Every structure is written in structure tokens, then in C-alpha cells.
Amino acid sequence: MSNKGEKMGRNIQVGQEIPVLTKTAFMPIEEDARNPIHTEGYAKKFGMRGALVAGSTLLSYMLEMLYNTFGEKWLSHGKINISFIGGGALNGDQIIVHGLVESIETQEDGDRITLDIWMENQNGVKIMVGQASCLG
Amino acid sequence: MSLESDFEALPIGFDLGEWEMNLDEKTINSYADLMQWQAREVIDKLHFAPPGTSINRHPRMQFAKFTNLRSAIWAKSEHEFLKPFKIGTKIFIRGKIVDKFIKRGRFYKVAEFETLDENGEVLMRSRETGINVE
Picture (cartoon, each protein chain N blue to C red):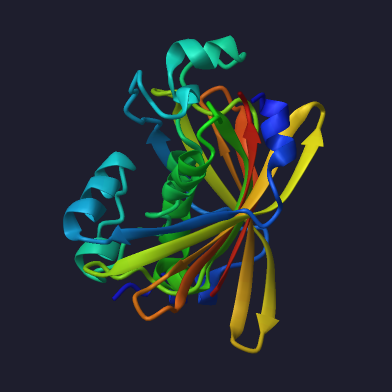
């Protein structure tokens, strides 16, 4: 059993930066995709740099960082609220996932740790911003 | 039908139906591979699906209902994880449209989803705001 969540709860402090997670963005490009925003030509027609990697894929990168941070507790006490900004990600973009402890609030069932979270690409452009929280 | 007229006709409370998903090992491992999920202990030791495994079903549920909608993108996404998704079980996703609005000429719709286990217990609650592109 993972005890990462317990470790974070004991040691974490407001202002602390969470270890970053890096990924090379990737989703298979299918030219007959149901949502053509994930295809090159269509996405460019609407002003995108190219075929957009799905939001759910980018979200999974963020969720992996949060699982790494909070461990098993994330699966039953995690909350996340994000906005997609900055034109999204394309295949091959270097994605860096960040978290910074914003607050620690004592509740009846434990300390709820809130993080400011964001995701940026290789050019430092933020493509996702939001907050996440979990019992520590 | 145009994007605008379809949007205007969309009733708040519109039912997106219920989708079933089998959390078998093949499905979970395929998802983990596709997402480059490195934290393997959640699968191999805890026997749970990575968080978010079912979230890519949510837009598919909408596209299945809105057959005139050609493309859409996510604007916002909120999720509350209440219980782990156990590998080897089935889950059921229910969704509905809860709001819609026009901002800067763009058509936004807000959908809420609940993911339940085989006993009807809620595992995850989601609220997602999307923009209808075309």
C-alpha cells in the first residue's frame, strides 16, 4: 500500500513546490476522428497550431502528478478544478506539470491541502491552470 | 440545423444517458500506456484504475447524443474523486446538460456526470464546460 499521502500530510508546508512531472504530449492522430479538432487540417482552420491533444489526455498528466503527491488518498479524497488555456498542446510538446501548496485547512476528517496547479509547454506558455485539494 | 439553432434548442436538463465501462485489465493497461502513466503501483499493487480513466468517455457521450455537433473543445473541468475504481468491475457513467451560455460569440455548454459502481455508489462527480466549435 502506498503511504505517499500520509507522508505529504506530515511534511507539507504552504508555499512548498510539488515535484514537477514532465511528459511528451501524445495522442494518436486519426484523420477520421469523431472530433476533428484532433486532426491537423481542421484544427489549423480554426486557428490552432495543429491537431490538439485531447483535454482528457492533458488532464491525465495532471492527475498523475496529483497521485504522486497524495498517493492512495487522492483516489477517494481528491478534488480538481481546471481551465484549459493558451491554445492547448500538440503531439511532441514538452509538458511540465506544476503544483504549489496554497493552503492547509484543518477539517474534521483531517487536513485538506490545496494546491495551485498549472501545466506549461516547452515555451513556458501555460496551457492549464487551476486548483486541486486532497486530505493529507 | 446550424450551430446556433441547435444550441438554442438544447434544453437544460437534457439527459446524456448512461454508459457502461468494463474496468478489465486490458482496458486499464491500454489506458495507462496511452497516457504514459508511470505510477504503476496503483494498477499492479492496489488493483485500481488510474484516476481519470473514464473521463474521456464524457465527451463521447455528448457526441453520441449531439449528432449535428462536428467539433468541440474543453474550457473547464472539475472532478471529485470519492472512491477508487476497482479493476475487474463495471462502472456506469450518467450525464446531463446543466447549463448553457454564450460568451464572446462562443457557445458554451455545461455537463455534469456521475460515475457509479455496480452497487450504485458514486465513485466520481464531474462538471465540465465545453465550447461547441462547429
